Structure formats: C-alpha cells, structure tokens
Amino acid sequence: MPTEPKTIDIEAIQKNLLKAVADIEGKVEGAFNIRQNGDSVGRSSTKNIEIKSREDGKPGIDIIVKPGTKGEKVHIPVVLIESGLNDMVYNDFYIGDGADVDIVAGCAIHNCGADKSEHDGIHTFHIGKDAKVRYSEKHYGEGEGTGERVLNPTTLVHQAEGSFCEMEMVQIEGVTSTIRDTTAHLGKNAKLNVIEKLLTHGSQNAVSNIDIHLDGEGSSARIVSRSVAKDHSRQEFHPVAIGNTDCRAHIQCDSIIMDHSIVRSIPEIAANHPDAQIVHEAAIGRINSEQLVKLETLGLSEEQAEQVIIDAFLE
Amino acid sequence: MLELKNVSFRAGSGGGDVEILDDISFTLPEGRILVITGPNGGGKSTLARLIMGIEKPSSGRIFWDGEDITDLDITQRAQRGIGYAFQLPAKFKGIKIWKLIELAAGHKMDEMECCSFLSKVGLCAQDYIDRDADASLSGGELKRVEIATLLARKPKIAIYDEPEAGIDLWSFSMLVETFKNLKQDEKQNIVIISHQERILELADDIMVIANGHIASYAPRDEVLPQLRLGPIVDDGCPVPGWKSEVQEYAN
Image 1 (tube, each protein chain N blue to C red):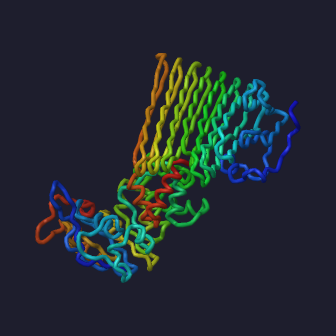
Image 2: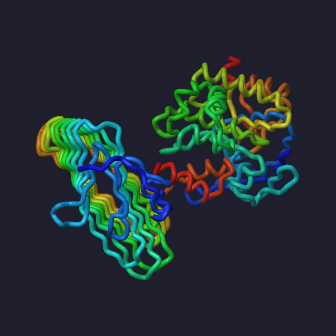
Image 3: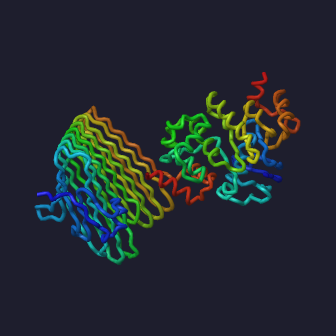
C-alpha cells in the first residue's frame, strides 16, 4: 500500500549535490526516492504515485503513476560519495493513461579518492495512452580525487497512442566519461522531444547514441542536441531516426568546438515508408568571432564573452 | 576628446598591401556630433573600427581624453567609454534581445526599461524582448537591435556605422528623432557614418573621407552645400563612381 504523502529533511545528505542535479533544497515534497552510495536513503509515495523496490531482485525501483494523475512531480536523484563504487540501478516507470507528470532524475558523483566511481542507470518508461511526461535528467561530477567519475545512462521509452514525452538530458560539468544510450518506440500519434545539452572539458569523453523508432502512424519526434567541447575533450553523437510509417522527425545537432577538442556528429535518418518525412541538420564550429567582438565592445573580456555565448547556447 | 595623429592602415590583398587609410589626423572636441560620409570603400568603417580597437593602425597614434589608447584592446576601450554599433550586426543563437540590452547597459533591467530602448529604434518592444537576437530577425530588425544596444550602453563616444542601412522609412524617421534627442546631451560625442541628408543635417561637423584621406572636415554649413553641388574631389581628382544620397536628394 502506498504510504501517505510526507516530507523529510534531507540536510544531512549532500545538499550541494542534490541541488546540482535535482534542484532540491532542504525538503522534498511529493513522491521521491533518494539513492546514495547504492542504497535508498529516503523514499515517499503519494496517493497517486507509488514508488517501491523491484520484485525481480535487481537493484532499483518501480515508479507507478495512476491513470489520470495530474500535475504531480517525482524526484529520483542519485548521489555517489564513496570512491570506488560501481552502482548499477534499474528503474521502471509505469505512467498510467491520461496522466500528466514531471519526473526529475539526475546523478551527482563526488569522488575524493583515487578509484573509479561509476553509476549506470537503466531507465525504462512505459507511457500510457494520451499520457504526458516531462523528464529531466542532470549529470554532474566533482571531487578533488584522481578517480574517474563515470556515468553511463541507458533510457528506453515505449510510448502508447497519443502520448507526449519531453526528455531534457543535461551534463554540464565534472563527468570524466559517459556513454549515453537512448532508445524510443513511438505509437500512433505519439510525440517525443529530446533535448540534450552537453559540456565536456579536460580530457573527458562523451558518447551519445539516440535511436528513435517511429512505429505509429502520425507519430513525430524532435531531437535537439547542443554541445560545447573544451580543452582536450572528445564528443561523439549518433542520433538515428527511423520512420516506419507516415511520420515526421527532425534531428538538429549543434556543437561549439574549442581549444584542442574533437567532436564527431553522425546523424542517421532512415525511411521505411513513403510517407515518412525525416530531416537532419548538424553543425560543428568555433564560437563566431563577430559575436565575441560585439560583446567585447560592450565591455566584456574575451573570457566573459565566451562564457556568455556558451551559457546562452546551452540555455 | 578624441584625437588621431598620423593614423594609417594597410591591409593585405592579393599578396600586396593596400592603403585603406593614409596619414589621418584630426581632433573631435567634446559634445560635437560628427557625421562621416564619402564613397563606398573610402575607409569610413575602417576608421570607426580603428577607434574601437577592432583593427590596429599600421602606424600613428590614437588618443582618448589625453590617454594614448593605441595599444589598448576592444574591452579596455569599451570600459573607457567608447562604443560602436556595427554596420553588419552579429547574430546570437540563444541570446535574447533583453539579455543583449542588459549586457550593453551593464546592469539587470526590468521590462519597462528594456522596452524604452527598443521603442527608440521603432521596435514594438513587447514583441521583441523575449526573442533571440539571431537569424530569425530580418536585417532591418537586427540593425535596430544593434542601435538599441549602443543607446543602452550610453558611452562617452558613440559611433554608429550606417544606422540607416536596411531600415524602412518609418523607422528611419524615428531614428532621426532619437539622434536629435541625443544631441541634447552635450557631453556625449556622437559619430555617425551616413549618406543620408537628414542625418547630415543633424551634424555639427561633417567629415568626407575618400580614397583613404580626409577630403573635407568642417562645420556642416560649409560642407553640406559642397556635397549638394557634385562629386567630392580628392587631391584635385573627382572620386570615381560616387553618387551619394545627398546628390540624389539635391537633384
């Protein structure tokens, strides 16, 4: 049975990390599960949203949203503070027909040791008929140690007829290595928006693979990827849209390349039906010098101007 | 006060140096409106870019309020009160017009303050403040946003590079009114590069630049009648191919 809605004080748990990835300050309201160093350290369900441990023995939770639930939020942040931990978790989301919810996920790693800390989250979404989901996932790393901070998220999305899903996936700082795999199957008239924002620096590596299968008639998808690569970092993007019916899809990848970084962008579109309309755009380039000069004439230093342009690009 | 001493600028082209500006010297006293005119390619925009620090002179020195600023970069000159509205404005993906105006002013501002600058350039402010200053704007809209940034910045010397370019007649009339109002501020130096009669009429002084030289620099009432008469001569030779707006207007 779901427990009554409640709030807990999470001040003891790395406030900084929770603020960074889940915009949580002080108390969490509504349904939530906070995972720290491989264990759940706080959990609450509500009347309409149940969060429970998995029954198949794998680490992770099931999040069950009742049909027709409106305007509720779910927070499921993950925090890794122990150096050398390899945390793998399976979270399944069951969004009932006609529900309309916001889900805030995210993982923060604080590694102060020399060993690798890794979190691999496998999220599976089953989005019911006419349901709406806005999913936000932020990844962040920090810590004075030499150990790597690794985040390898896998996201699987199954969208039923008429459903809408918006996924905003952001990695701004401190993640040594990431391989992101996202796969979505869209039913009739389902709509998916994926917004990916990525910034790499130092010698970080990032790979993002996104496969969208437009299976249902009238389905549509939009993938917008914005990235900034600094220092000696490397990025690789491989967004794929496959139209299996009368459908529409648009892939747009823009990258700003700086210093000695390397960026590869390999969009792929495939039409298996004569009424599939699929478009891709990809661009990689330096910060436009005209933009820098204009901002310098407004009194900003070159570094400040670069920051303004990058912040706006990733906004 | 702005002072240029023997400023020359050469640019590489086709393997050889081309003299864009040759031994330019002049002084611009405080509180005067200077309109610079002359044929295309004569060096007007280059002169403005040299003052802003976007280009560095091949020789000569530039002084601002008694300080030699020749070796200062763009940022340092901006911080000393020099401002420039580009002939061809940059486009910014993701930067809202509101943010750009705030950056120019150097402080956060409420909607009403931001709108006041956009209204001065004939933009219906509420339709624009939340839009990106990017390629979704027309050339004329971008140009007016560019002018608004310089109005918001309120520099000690404001240089407008062909503010009329790409702007419709109605907006141009509003712009002329805005420049007239700026004229009331006797402390600000205004330099406008323009070919428009109505802008030339606002000038205290007019400078004609042709073939990299100052062909004329004198109070408006001395220069404007000459401009209406015919082609400006440079070192005794007519400037080829110059048919200015002023001449067309006079005819």
